[in-house]
Length: 62
Image 1 (cartoon, rainbow, N blue to C red):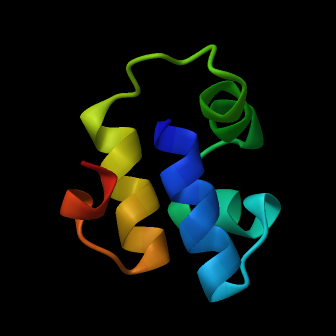
Image 2 (tube, helix red, strand yellow; image 1 turned 180 degrees about the vertical axis):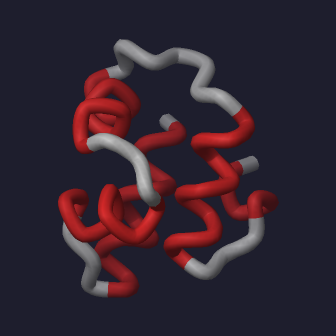
């Protein structure tokens, strides 16, 4: 569910997952775990980095 929100923002902004990993300073593996559901409770720090890279509020992920 969380990944769907991230993916929606990626499409809206025209950013690839690879580019997001570089912008956010997180591994592609971390994003892949989020995408596949392996990471059920991502860290606050990870979500802050993703939100900052996408230039959105953390509230977007509620």
